[in-house]
Length: 298
Image (tube, rainbow, N blue to C red; front, side, top):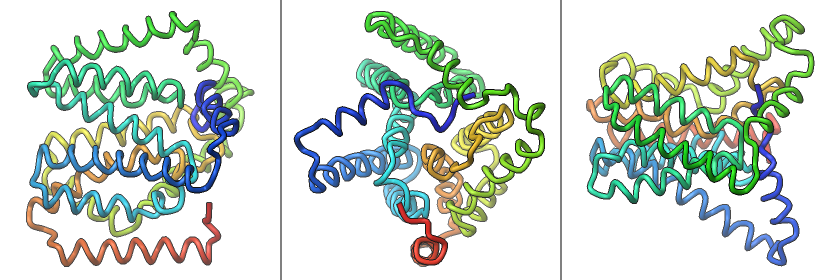
């Protein structure tokens, strides 16, 4: 199953940038800043829809200082994938408001863009379908299905075969078939590496805060959404996704979702501004240490 490989259109977008007359560092930093700010905006809007603006601000700040974000975000196309995934999930969750047609259009745009950047566009789609079943809001599933059908029609209009591309990338990623049978030892250790790398780049304190958020309020719907995203990614790992590791970079799209239990933990008055500041400082010091002494510099 393909993971770290971007789709054909993702490669085309890189080539277009390389051919652009505006290849200056200022232009590149401007584009990067737009991607970062928009992702933070969607995280802020998502959290503020369920909690207050103060908690939304705390989570947005914590997201910025996560080591994986600090190290990889401005140097990888995975940051754009994180933006499109977060945007798609946000607009799915806000179907119920008055701007339903605007949300459907933007959901279509983000799924359409995601499919050109990575073959893992099935990741947010699976999350939305599973969450729809848990919520028992089947009308959302009907709308989501309609959006996906519209995306497939769009593929046909531009003569793009997503399934063929997906299968080709899967063969490249796993040329000898399912690695549990072809390379069992490598399969086992790379699965452990994938999980441990994500936790390392997420930070020990945030991992503990996420665990406690899940433990204290398991019935919360946003926490259930976070658990769905974690379970979906772990299932992908079991199928052989991320053969070469680098999940901290490839899984940048996961971090907004696994921060949701932290938001709920803060909402339960388990954290205050003092604790949030401590977490941010420790995350930043961890990033500096990893870049200087562990050579994680992109």
